[in-house]
Structure formats: structure tokens, C-alpha cells
Image 1 (cartoon, helix red, strand yellow):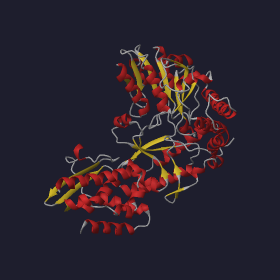
Image 2 (cartoon, rainbow over the protein chains, first blue to last red):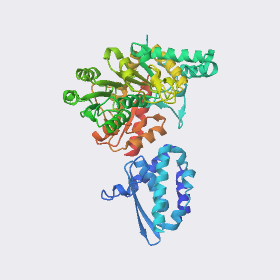
Image 3 (cartoon, helix red, strand yellow):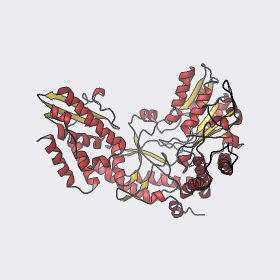
Image 4 (tube, chains in turn brown, orange):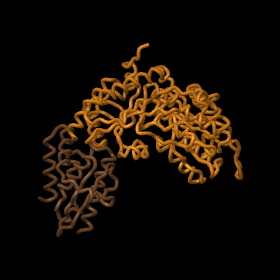
Amino acid sequence: MTIREKQAALVDEFAFFDDWMDKYNHIIEMGKSLQPLSDQDKQEDLLVQGCQSKVWLKAEKQGDAVKFWADADAIIAKGIVAMLIDVFDEQPAAEIAQAELGFIEEIGLKDHLSPTRANGLMSMIKQMKIYALAFA
Amino acid sequence: MAYDIDYIRSQFPILDQQVHGRPLVYLDNAATAQKPKAVVDAISHYYYNDNANVHRGVHTLSQRATDAMEAVRDQVREHIGARESAEIIFTRGITDSINTVAFGMGALIKPHQNVVITALEHHSNIVPWQMLCERTGATLRYIPINEKGELVVHSLEEIIDEHTAMVAFNHISNSLGTINPVSTILARAKAVGAWTLVDGAQSGPHAKVDVQEWDVDFFTLASHKMYGPTGLGVLYGKRERLEALPPYQGGGEMIATVTLEKSTYAEIPHKFEAGTPHIEGVIGFGAALKFMNSIGIEAIAQHEAELLTYATESLSSIEGFRIIGTADHKASVLSFLVDGTHPYDLGVLLDQQGIAVRTGQHCTQPIMDQFCIAGTARASFAMYNTKEEIDLFKAALERAVNMLR
């Protein structure tokens, strides 16, 4: 699936829930099922700057594509980074760098995050794109 | 007279609303309290009828605005038991009040002297003193806390010594709710001749303070935590201390004479009130004090104590619920963690259910470091909160915890 198709699939998934508590529950479940980073990997240099909770993001170049891993100390932040990984993981670096992420607004997530948390989300996206740019 | 909670709630229109489709339960009062109609009305009345700059015009509106502002100064004097209204300085807030004292002391303190604060302070009562010590070479010392979040007072004699220039501490901790033994600390400070400052950020809305009874040199209040407008604080200082202290900011209103070479300063309180003051804030604060006193601070404190006891007992039945700060003497703050959950996640899921709590370090990073935690969730109560709201809070917290574990 392309980045665009991945986003559309996520929007469909979230459209299934009417209540925001259920949408949050889904984000939490995504966070719980994201494979955790080892304690060894949870280093200062992998921390995403600008997040209120601690979010670690690791990336590796695999041919033209980028492989991502992430973890967070708060589960909602982990769920959000899991959504981003779902969209970006193993996609071509050049496309990640240029991608527009419409799904965040379509799901309504941006309006439901406090400004500090929305900034955290933007920081995660920025960090993933920086990795992709470096690998492209 | 019975505590008329329905009347009180009716005075705070903001409480009557839905957040994310649920009734708002506002439990972030230690950050800022909501404002009663009387405060908003006083501000509107001022702008509709009396607005003018103060202390300089001879015209009627300026006189009215000046009289209104000075009447509040006297109201504050009476509220905290100061000798004279000239000892009441209006500032931008507690941060500004403490900076005013810490900056002024830069000219008075010697490098071999020390400043004593506690490990229980808000950043606003840490950083100005750190800056003072960096500027002057003086040393900053801390009174430590125990595992319950209480100050370890048996160490006072060692920490506060004949080289101590200032002892500054809060009356009530904003992040743990601990009520500190003010008289014990002040007695030791006075025994060595140190100046003293008590930060009343959290006691203003919950406790009656008499600065003469305490015999404290400086005391601070924040209007917005006492149901008044934001952007206004109070610095009380004994006349002789305020006269000894150089002014913090220069400008209009704070001068006696200005020539291009040299200026002389006005008498207190104006020496410390450079620029056009927050007139509407002062007037709103006067209305807030009047409103608080009409309910009665003792009655409010008792109501809040009942809420704290009820909440502490009720929430403790949640598995893994852990209170951070279990001092014997506490005021209306419940800082907590729930095992297996992160406070940020609790904050988001509580908000989705209409419950407003604070999450994070509460501007008290050293306390969080001491407890080896990243932060807490904090519920704090005010005069308008109810047991029914605590029941809603508990149900919402249980739902959040179930989702997160």
C-alpha cells in the first residue's frame, strides 16, 4: 500500500467509532500493539524534541525504504506514533519526505489534542521526515 | 449559616457548560480559580463608567479610578492584617513579587551570605533566588522534605545560620498540598536576623493569614488563584524593608523627580509600581476579596477540607491509586498516580469525559525528581466543587484506568 492508501485505511478505521473515547481506545490499542524498543535503544539521542512525554524514534535505511521503530512512556503518545509508523514504515524515503498527512485532520485528531500535544505530534512527523531526507 | 453550594455555583456561570458532551468538572483550581459574576461585573462597571489613568489626572474619572484602586489597596491591607496600605504593592503576579524582592536584595546581600528556600517550592520561588546568588556570589540552601512531602524542620538550625540573609518558602505547596509550619521556620529565621518571605500563592484562597501575627517581612498573593483577574499579584512588605529595598523597575509613577542626570524615587508603595498599573485587575481583585469574605474563608476552607477527605477516601479504592504528598497537614490538593498508567494519558482521557485536572510537574521539577517520578495528575478543589463532582471524577478515572491498563 502507498502512503496515501495507508492514510485512507486509517481514516476508515476511525470512522467506525462515533465516540471520541472509543477513538482514543483505538489509539491506545495501537500503542499497546506497537513493538516496544529495548531499554538499550531508549537513548537520549533517539528522543523526539518537543513532546511532553518521552517519545523515542529509531530509523534505518533499507534500500530505498525507511524502517521505523518507536516507543513512548505515555500510551496515547505511543498510539499516535504507532499510527505514523503504520503510514510511513517501509515506504520509499523520497515519498516520506514529501508526504502530506491529511489523515490527522480527517480523523479529527488535531482538534482533539491540546496545543502542546498537537505540537508533539508535529515534532514526531518532522523527525520522521528528517530521517527520510537523510536517507533519500 | 449552612454552606449554600447552589448559590455559590450560580455565581460562576462558566461552570454550567458541557465539555466533550459531558458536564464540566473543573478541578484545576490550584492553577487558576474561576471568576464569580461579581468580579466580571466590577471590571465591566469600571470600563463602562470610570476608566482613566490613575494617580496623575485631576479630572473626575481619574480621581474615581484612583480612589477605586486605593480602596482595594486598603481592602488588601485589612485582609492580611498589614499596618498600613503603603505596605501593599500591586505587581504582575507572584513571580513578579518575588523577583522584586530578589532583585532588590542584590544590592544588599554579601557573597559570604546565604539564601534559604525549601525543596517544596514552585519554580517562581527558586529561580529568582538562584539568579540572585549567581549575581552576588551568595549561596542557595534548601530545607529538605521527607517521603510524605513534609519539610524536615529538625534540620533548620543547621541550614539557617548567622550568615542567612533571606528565608523564603511557601505557606502551602502547590504540587503536594503540604501546609508548612510557618511559625517554626519564621522563628528560626528571626533568631538569626534573616529577612523572611512567605509565598501565599496557595494559601490566599484557602486560609486566613495575618502578616503581623506572623511578623513576616514579605508576603505574596496571586489574584487569579483567589477568584480574581489574572495578571495581578500582591507584594506585602514591612515599611522598613520596602524602604531599604532598591526598586526593581524604573519608569513612570515610581519617581519623585526626574532630570536627565538623575532621578529620585517616590515613596512606597509607588516606588515599586512603575508604569500604568493593572487598574481593572485591582478593581476586579477587590470584588473577588469581597465575594470570598461574604462566603467566609473559614467556611470555604472547611468545605474544601471535607472534599479532600472525601476524595482521598473514595479514590483510594481504585487499584494502584497512589497519592504523592501525604503530609499530616494538607490543603485541597490531591496529587496522584495510578500504577500502570501515565499521568498524561489520564489527563487526556479525563478531559474527554469533561474532567479538568492538571498533569505534569506543576512547575516543581525538583519535587518530582525527589520522588523519582516524571510528574503527577493533580486534582485541586475550590469553594464551588461538590462531592457529586468527585463521584463523576472517580467514575471517569476508573474508566480511563481500565482503558489504559
